[in-house]
Amino acid sequence: MADMVSIMPCLDMQNGRVVKGVHFVDIADAGDPVECAQAYCAAGADALAMLDITATVENRPTLVRVVRDVAKVCTVPFTVGGGIGDVKAAAAVLEAGADKVSISSAAYRRPELIPELIHEFGTDKVTVAIDVDVNPALPSGYEVYIDGGRTATGCDALEWAKRMDDSGVPVILPPSKAGDGARTGYDLPVIRAMAGACRAQIVASGGAGKMEDFLAAVKAGATILLAASVFHFRLIEIPALKRYLKENGVAVRL
Image 1 (cartoon, rainbow, N blue to C red):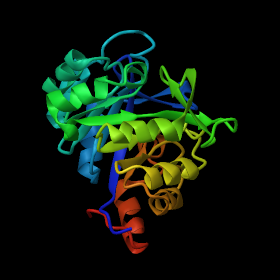
Image 2 (image 1 turned 30 degrees about the horizontal axis):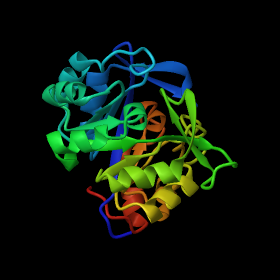
Image 3 (image 1 turned 30 degrees about the vertical axis):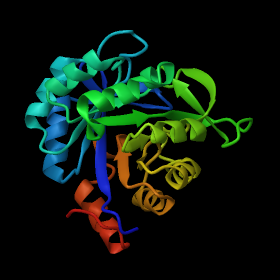
Image 4 (image 1 turned 90 degrees about the vertical axis):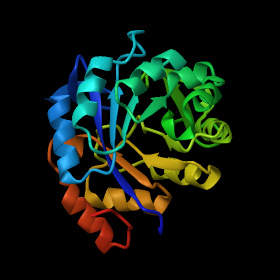
């Protein structure tokens, strides 16, 4: 557990507002994105993610205006995903102030997009997100979902992660559909399997409910800890979480 571990609040966006659901549905308003970003940066977040959760299924680009507004106040590395389907869309988001783009459905539909993005912008600008859910019929026990978790692909999540890792992406973000917003703990078998099979950093995403969940994710191999509802609704404060992790032997920036 020697790697420096990052805390990454996530702003799930819909209609220009931060929202939070459970299992990708039952969406509730959680605030203004600029205010949320400012608060998280002030509280000691190490990075920030913003996901436009309906851009892909609504077949529209990411809300560049919101990206620009958040980037102006964001003092930490800022990753944006949702609706980024080609190099041009990625360029628009990066030019608006994002530090990195996160690609999910578009990468699955056209895997060569990832090498194209890396060639155009560099490896440090690209993250691949892989929405996963349990499927005991597949070798790893997990299946890739696309379209904001709405469409099952039949593809084994670990095999897909290894393929994306081979393409050179430095970060893989596998949100757990079962865990999303449920606060029942991260999906540790997914984290463990991907961390064991990939060179990329693995982001724990989906299910954080208490501080012990974050520590368990680190022990499973995650080096970036993403959460939304526990931070949005102030169930866990970032400084207290960092102190807890440090007390338990995790390297964090205080």
